[in-house]
Image (tube, rainbow, N blue to C red; front, side):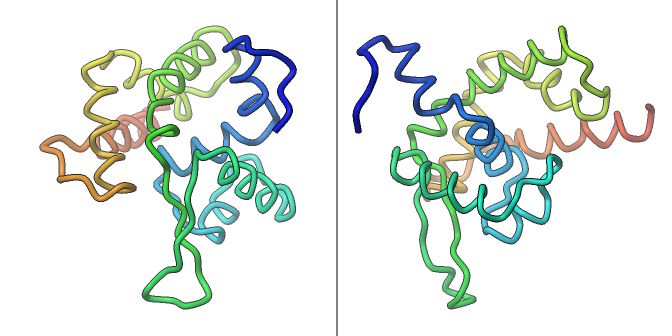
Length: 160
């Protein structure tokens, strides 16, 4: 692929800077949506089917996502994060914290971002270990950050 420059910020923006790539990665990472149907059906932003297909293809080409046939359903594909995508957890945590602080995000949808920001690098490392287990077959972690983030979301939903 042709790149505009060798600047690491530019290169990162070229890979992740479109309107949907980080949102698709967010849904795989934090929602644990692993199939096309789950990603499309649970999209908060209402991603169009052609855009979702295009972004998944691009994320695979860039090495952020892999695809494998679902052994339980021959016509379904399961998408997995790669180590390259899992390494974005601290970036996603900081991006979510920034958005929760400076933009008109709802308390309910900010709950996971706030919990992850408050948990800091220790929580990010635990989350990356959990994602490695779910997506790369690593040993199961002792801590489920996904469960903690879901509990924060549920608590915010009950106390708007």
